[in-house]
Image 1 (cartoon, rainbow, N blue to C red):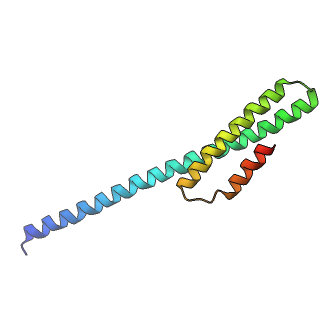
Image 2: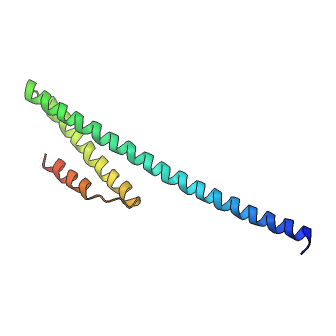
Image 3: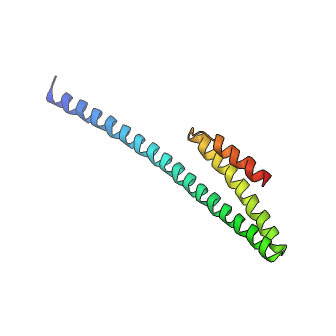
Amino acid sequence: MQVKHKIVLSSIIYSLGLGALLILLIYSLERLNTIEDTKSVIREVEVSMLSLRRNEKDFLLRKKLKYVNKFQVNKDRIHQNIIKLEKLLNVQNINTEDLKKLHLLMHSY
């Protein structure tokens, strides 16, 4: 085998290796974005649940109906975020049984 052929073969192998690394990098970035989206939705659910509790306390303390309306808005927001979170977790093949329980609890709340 000539030196020229060895250099060409080495270049092809290096190019294929770099291509594989590029594909791996793109895949990793997509997974990282999905995980970041999931974290963001979890934070939104936590904040909404705290707001829900605050609305409940305000209503019990002040007896004003505006807090019932705020409560309902926050409850609807939680339901939407739980559905969004369930879709994100399913894409990542993560068990959603606890999330389904939370959804049922929030529905009965």
